[in-house]
Structure formats: structure tokens, C-alpha cells
Amino acid sequence: MLVTQQKVLRRFWYPVIPAERLADAPAPFTLLGTKLVLFRDAAGKASALIDRCCHRTAKLSQGWLDGGNIVCPYHGWTYAGDGRCTRIPQRPDGDPGKGIAVEAFRCRERHGVVWVALEEPLRDIPDLPEYDDPAYRRVFEFYEPWDAPGLLIMENSFDNAHFAFVHKASFGIVDEPEPVQPRLEPHPAGFIMYADVPVKNPDIQKANLGIASDRTIRQYEKTWWMPFSRKMKVTYPNGLVHIIMTLTAPIDDRRSQVIQFLLRSDSEAEAPAENLITFDRQVTHEDMAILAACDDDVPLSMNGELHMPTDRPGLEMRRMLAKLLAEHGEAEVRRDGPVSQPLASAAE
Ligand code: FES
Ligand SMILES: [Fe+2]
Image (cartoon, rainbow, N blue to C red; front, top):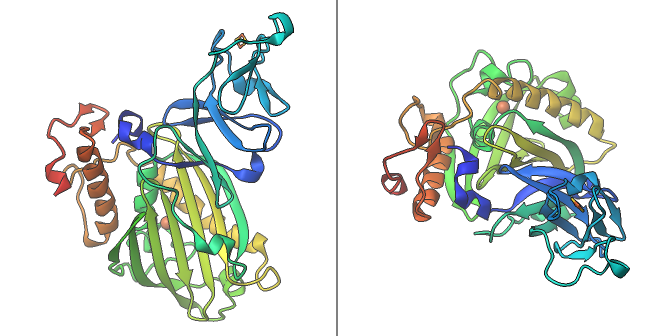
């Protein structure tokens, strides 16, 4: 599936930038191939406009902010957060008159993240009650582009069979490749997966978790936020809760922008954020190296790849995305063109 070719994917909220990174300068962002400029308007509200001035197409993201309006770097036409042109400096008094505007997109701030929807969203940004719960501290991990599409990142996140191989240097148990089978349940955001997985507990994790043994059990509760984000809640035998939020936005058909942060039930004194980030970075780098070398055009049908029982969460994602396309009258588009078979059967 090529995400830029599937129109219905424009109808979701995507996490484009951590809210605190959007301060007093405009930021460019490419979402599903659409070039945007993000900035805070006069009221401090996060705003997203097309990154293309309606005078001579200059990039507004190369401009600057003036009282919460964005100034085009080419001739100074100025736009408010809703896209309205507020000033044309070449005119008497700068008055732009009425009706001059650039395209503006829906833009919201939630869970410490700025979200953008290119068209009317089909569903709301999912709830994340732990974000505002004082029982959890927040640890920002990273904000960066990955050379992999969101579906590949999501399938990897819900794949119990890769730990013994991809994560053999971090938490995977090399000698025990037989994976734990996941249990899936419906969830308004997508689905939820449960699995209790034995893992290696290296020294850094012994300190991070306050668990002295060489092995431990991760009680996984992973929620897929359709289409390309996840909440991974891990509960350890000592009651510690480690939630990894991995929020991804599709840049184009291959790349994703990834925001990752933690919600932890312990304190900084018990486990310094720096050490949590060090371990999680090792794990994510292990995944990134594999994903960047996989085919990016993930098929939604069962054909074309072979499967095993632990692939079920990924196959469920494919099935639900195929159903979404079918419901909106779209064929899946792949590199060699639209899939001729309508996806109705996939919607069963
Ligand atoms: S191109 Fe933006 S003001 Fe001319
Ligand atoms: Fe992984």
C-alpha cells in the first residue's frame, strides 16, 4: 500500500511535532506528501498551512513570524493561522482586501503533541488517560524520521516472534525462539493485544526496573491506534508500569516521522530518565536497522508474503486497513499500480 495514494488516509489525525518544539519559529513538515508549515498563531494555537505562498509559491516555512502571523520570505505577504492573508506590504496600508488566503488544515494539540488532519477526520485522537495522571511521569525519548512506512513500524511493534533475533543483544532470549501467541481484542482506536512475554533482563534494565533477576516477564498490553501509532503498556512483576508511546506520521510512501515518549509509574530517583532512554534507544535502533531494509510497499492482501501465527496482529491491521479502503470505494495502490481485485473480500 502506498499511503500517499490512499485518499482516505488523509482523514486521520497525525502526530506531527512535539508541542513544546513548536515555539517562536515556523517549522516545515511533509505529511502524506503534502508540504505544510506549522506555527503558533497570535493566540498561541498550533496552526498548519500549505507551505506555498499564493503569490509566487515561495515556501512560507522559510519566512518568519510577526505577532503570530507568518511572513512570506519572498515579498512579505503575511498570513494568519487560519490561512487568511492579513497584509500585502506593497499595497497602501498593507491592506490585502478580502478573499486572499492559503489552504489551512485542522490542527490540534493533545497529549503534548501537535496533530494535523488533512481532511475531515473519521475519528478523534485516541484517549491517553495516563498522560494527565500524576501517578505517571513523562519522559521524552526522541523525534526523528525513520526510513520505514508506518504499517511496517506498527506490525513490528506487535510481532512477538522477532525479539529472539532482532533484540538478541538487548532483551530477546536467543535460545527460546518459540514466540508467545498474542490475544487480540477490539478497541475503539484499532485493537488491543495482550501477551505475557519472558525477556532477558540485562544489567541496565536491572537498575531501570528495580528487578535483580537475569530474566523477567513483560505483561504487554499494546493498543494499535489506527493507522500508524501505538501505545505499549508493559507491566512488570513488581508492579512497575512502563508505557511507550510511539506516534508516527507518514511523510511519504516510505518514510515516517516518529515521536516517542514514556509514561512511567516510578520516579526519576528510582530510574533516571537518561538510563531509560539509553536502553529504549538500543532497542529502537535494533528495529530501525531491520525495517529500513524491508520492502516499504506492504501488501494488504494475504498474498505475496508468507505468514505465521504471531503475524496475526499485523494481518489484522492489513485486514482493517483493507476494509477501510473498501468502505471508501478505494482500491489498494501499490508500486505497480492499483490492485485490480476490489478489496471487498478483504472487508469480510
Ligand atoms: S511569493 Fe510570497 S509574497 Fe511573493
Ligand atoms: Fe522490536
